[in-house]
Amino acid sequence: MGTRAAQRTVGRPLVVAAALGAALVAGGCSTSEAGADGAVDQGYVSGDGSLVQLAPDDRGDPVELVGTTLKGETVDVTEWRGAPVVLNTWFAACGPCRVEAPDLVAVAEETAADGVQFLGINTRDGAAQAEAFEEEFGVGYPSLLDRDGEGVLALRGELPPSATPTTLVLDAEGRVAARFLGIADPATLRTVIGDAVAEAR
Image (cartoon, rainbow, N blue to C red; front, top):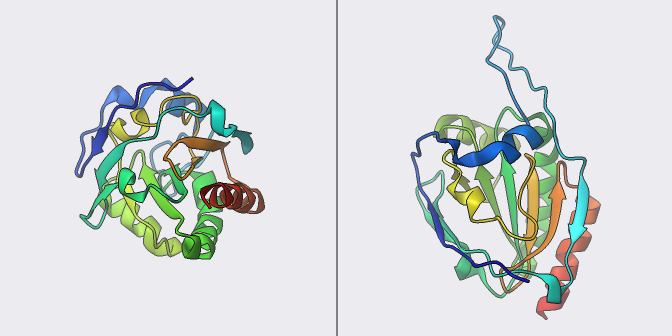
């Protein structure tokens, strides 16, 4: 049932391109230019927070994704095999992304003792915007800049991201086990991660 895994490298800075695709634009947050008062229109069409989970036998190939974080460090998700990984797509002016950020930070801190790794994939911002967001919400886990969509392309498969935010939970083998479209309910996310941790034992 799996699709062929293609390794994608995400670096910084990246050039804006159309590779993000219509799925993230139409199915995710959309923002307009800042108005005269400097405020950003955070109107959006987003996922509804729905959760889809895949049984182990129905999961595709492991995700292969390499990139450079906002702090200039290289991240290769294949090095995190053996424990669950949580991937979250976001950008700074996305209203739902701002709503769920404190919960993601809390869940990341709570599950770190189980070896769970969190990685953000920023789909629109420059480094300054992304870093300001992380500072505002106290985000301690790394994020990649993905303005050319290479990181998102690495996630296509049985449960690709089709809204921003999207949260994917990878099992210990690196396969997508669950997907939240839109804001991830923190209690449900904890349960899904707990299931993935239990599978790995």
